Length: 440
Image (cartoon, rainbow, N blue to C red):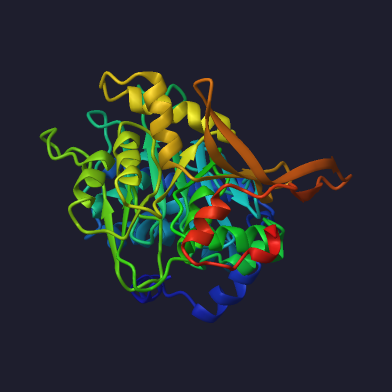
C-alpha cells in the first residue's frame, strides 16, 4: 500500500501489516458484505471512468460514502482498503497473483472463474473474483496500455509481453463467446539450469551430457512438445551450453530466452500498428539474421513459413541452430515441418522437402508434461536418412512410464538404447570426446 494512500485514509500501517498476515478472505465472517462493498466501490470506478490523476481523491470519497453506516472491524476496513489499493495502484484482483512467485500461469475465464497453475498443477482460485466483464477489461487495459497496446471492440484481441517478461493474451467478445478471456504466462525470474533438471528427474546425467555434447558439436536441434511442456525452458538450458565466444542471434515472437553469454543479439517480432502496417514476422527476422554473421541462430518457436528459411539456414553452413515446435512426437514434428515448408507456395516435391529436412535436422528432443505436473524429456532421437521416401529416425534415449502411484505421481524409467548413433561420427569429427565412454 503506497504512502499517499495510507496517509489519506489515516491507516495504522502496523495494524495493516499484522492484519495482512491473516488477511485471508475466508477469515472474515461476513464475506458477502465485504464482497458487496468492494464491488460497489469498483463499480463506481468503472462507471465514472476515473483517471489515474484523480483516482486517489475519488476513492477516498467513495469508500467513506459506501461503508458509512456499516459496523466494520478495523481488520475488515483494512481488508477493503487493501483491495481498493490494488485497484488504484496495482492490477485489481490479479495484483497478488502476479506477485506470487510460485504461480506460473493465470487464466481468467470469467468474472468469478479464475484458474492458476501452482507447482505444475492447475487449480481454481476461489478467493479471487472480478465485479463484472467491464472490470476484467479495465484490468487488461491497465496492463497493456503502458506497452502502447490497446484492447476494445475495434481491437478485441491483444498479445503482449509485460515489462517483467510475462506473456499476456486477452480476447474480447465477439471473438470470445464466454466474455473477456485473459491468460498470463508468468516469467520465471529464477532461471532453470541443467542441475535443476537432474534434481527434479527431468532427464538423466547421460542424457544431459549427450545434449551438452551435441550443442558443443554444433548439431542442429529441434525441441518438440505440447503446450506448457517446457520447450522454451529446455531451450534456455541447452543454450547455456554454447561457448561464450560465439555470436548468437535469438528470434522470438515475445522475448522469453535469457542467454547468459555476452555476445547475444535478441530480435523480437512486431505486430501491425493502428494503421494496419509495420508488421515484422519471425520469417522476416530469420532472413535478416543471415546477414548478421551469426555463429548460432536460435528461433524461439517455428510455426509457419519461417520453417523453410530456418531449414535453409541449417543447410547453408549455420550449424548449431536450435528451435522449438508444437508437436506430440518427433514423427509428428517432421510431418508438421513438411506442411510448413509447403505453406511457402514454392513448388517443391515432397521427396525433396524430406531430403531437405533430413540434411538440416540432426537431433529431435521431445519434452512432455505428465499428469503429476512434472516435466520429463521423453525421447532423444536422431535423423539417420531417408528410406523409400520416408525420413528415418532412430531413438537414443527414452522415458518409459510404468504406472501411477496412489498420490498421483507418475513413475517410470529412463532407457538408453544399445545403439551407437550416427551423430557420434559428427561429434568425433569435431575432435570432441566427451561421450566416448557412453558409446564405445
